[in-house]
Image (cartoon, rainbow, N blue to C red; front, top):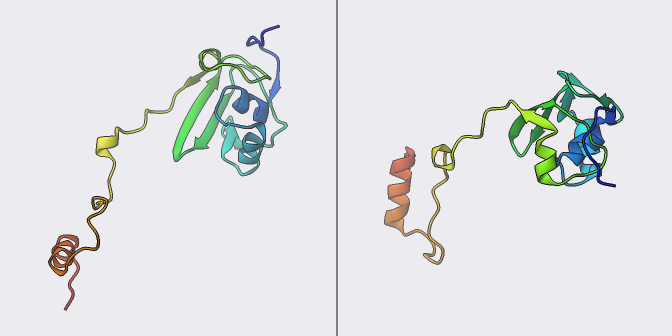
Length: 129
């Protein structure tokens, strides 16, 4: 028997795990207890029931997912089936080229020379006197 989406109530920790928001069920339960998963805007416990129509907010990997529950599943399903169980209303993450980056020296170039350190200090606005 294949686990197909249905409309029965399911524990919130089992649901966020089964739709692949978390890698393990215990990781999902820990996130719910820590307040990283909210049901309809409220903090919840792992045993709270989820039904279609609920809104689940998940804070994961420095990104918030705002999920509208379309179907419930209690067992982990494949990624294509999991995507049919919710709608993510969160805006997409910003593209990589717009994220602030930390300057990185090329591997194997060694320690910066005195001249390079002065240039870095000038660029960063440090005044070494």
